Amino acid sequence: MLMKYTPLLISICVWATACIPKTEDEDIDLTPYSVRLYVESSSYVLPFNQYGRAILESKDQDNRHFTEETQFYANDQPIPGNVFIPMDTGTYNIKGVYKDLESKEILIKVEEPLAKKILVEYFTSETCAWCPWIGVRIDSLDNADPNVLSYSIHGQDPFEIEHTVAFQDLMQVYGRPTVRINRGYHRNFPSPLRVQPLLDSVSYFLSRQAQLQLAIESKIKGDEASIQVRLKYFNKLIDSLYLTIVLVEDDLISYGQYNAYSGANYPGCPFNVLPHPLPEYINHNILRHFVTPIEGSLISEEPFIAGLEKDLGHFITPLENISIRDQCFIVAFVHKKPGNIELSSVLNAQIVKLGESVGFNE
Image 1 (tube, rainbow, N blue to C red):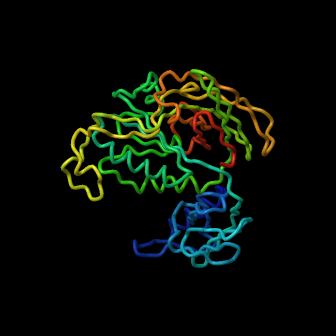
Image 2 (image 1 turned 90 degrees about the horizontal axis):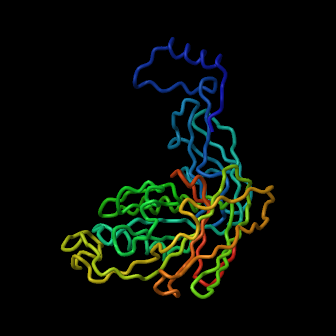
Image 3 (image 1 turned 30 degrees about the horizontal axis):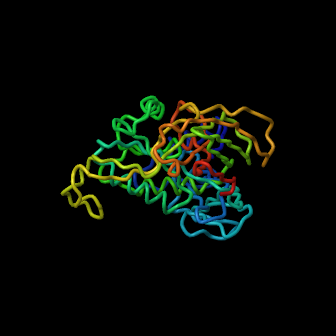
């Protein structure tokens, strides 16, 4: 974080710079009296697991970056490069040294990990010819990592639901394929999918400790489902929070999925040798119903007590548009500012099979 300095110091620095002529090749004056070095971290609270790492940067008060040339230290032990990977839980003192400059220390806290899931919302359609390969890669990420939770929102095909258009407006989606990660980071992916930004953003969000956790209990009662969601806070949060609950259905088949890859030669693409349109295409976790309003339900504020469980209420939802109940899942997540797409507005998410329950640490 940049520190404030007085107008007098600004005047001195400006005067000194103006009075000393410099050439383009001349080094920046890095005496301790003219430049201060600061260290920043991508996260200051890390989970102690395979995702817990922090990206470090160094800069001066004028936002000039010296990261590549800085030697970083954790508890006075040198760090290779600028990625801090903790060896144990605890508090670490982090500093940087660049030439004759040494930064003030910052603190990074490493804690036992809390269960955290990253939400991937994928906007697609049967008529989206570039979507099949993107969908397969998102499914692969979902299947490979239990901390990734994804579902798809269809439009202009038989799987579109009543609130699809309003939801697209809320999420600022203007075309397909579109991917929203934690309701903030997004890519309107071109073809073929450049998957690395997706993987990088998932790793970034998982490297941050969860601030809250969710548990879900569900029961089937005739043609309705009863859903109870509980919340557990670990940090006092300033923003208003909202709960969104949706029903998704897995393994639904499209019988006319467009396929722009047919006859092409994209390396590694499984759809190069398949026809257009695809006679059968399996879709995973399709949005079937909003249990809460599309913008979410406001969570009432109460005095903060760390670790205290909070009942977010019981919700009843109809099941008439569900084809196979045994393939239906409940997705619940807590987020900020329902009308704005901002970085990491989803704080945590949870998923459970319809009629079953899932705890905070699962």
